Image (tube, rainbow, N blue to C red; front, side, top):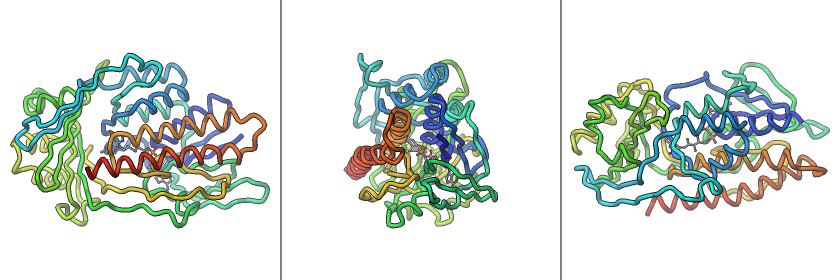
Length: 365
Ligand SMILES: Cc1cc2nc3c(=O)[nH]c(=O)nc-3n(C[C@H](O)[C@H](O)[C@H](O)COP(=O)(O)OP(=O)(O)OC[C@H]3O[C@@H](n4cnc5c(N)ncnc54)[C@H](O)[C@@H]3O)c2cc1C
């Protein structure tokens, strides 16, 4: 069986790895260059993501994920703008994590390198449209002028998916009026002095009275690497310039520092020490639930299917999708391809939109 996957983020390459292990032909098409530095932030992966990584990756690649993960912190805290802890939740390691999955923190760029290792990937090949062919196949067209005929087209192309609007023209993604600028500050001795101690021991978020907030967390590689502190400066979109996404990275970093200038001085200082190449920005969006559509040989995975407010679970849900679709495709026995895809979609829409709803409620609580 031949599969074309659009998007070399997290879910797309994991599905490709699982299919490849089962002997399927699979090729990934990615819009961007390999290794964009502003795609390298630290992400927390909830246990279902760990289980999917374990199921799809070859054992040595999965071991590399564990070896390059971040050191485990003791929990998460909420701080006030003067860096006093106002809430603390300790998260001890679960004795059953081997069975139930681990809480991992990973560097996204490092994880992507592991996920992409050994795959056939066409970079600078933005997906544009598909056509359903007689006989049940599908042809995908790309912006580099190429097209490819395949048995299954998988849109794993994230929040701004080009596959989703063609498959589901009525699906809506709503902006929530929140924007964020993020970046990484190398963990030099100076940065360690400036960082709140709790940011070196798990995840913390500084919250202001007016909707501004600043998540912070160190990523210290378990087996050595360029450790860093990840920071995000977030708040109501009206606090950010309208042309933020096209602004120079140094200007975005300067704007982030200005937004926290009236808080503890260490916070703006940490932002100003951020590596400009790693600075990025985004607006917060959420998908509206969609009813299940008539299954065709085109489907969706991860943020392309169920964009959600960042609450530390979207990456794990995207990886879970990859694990589930891989299982449905490789263990389908006598079932048709469309039956396998339909059963994946039914289950994915159920837990995916439950998580969209939970993330939205927890962000507005
Ligand atoms: C600063 C920041 C911090 C985050 N922290 C966390 C966290 O701690 N925990 C968590 O769970 N989640 C976190 N997230 C969210 C998490 O990164 C996403 O949920 C996850 O990456 C979704 O994976 P995906 O594979 O579905 O999509 P993506 O990772 O977005 O990948 C989509 C890929 O498709 C490519 N693409 C897009 N359009 C096209 C096209 N037309 N043709 C070809 N390719 C295309 C893109 O270039 C990209 O490579 C964070 C996000 C940000 C921005």
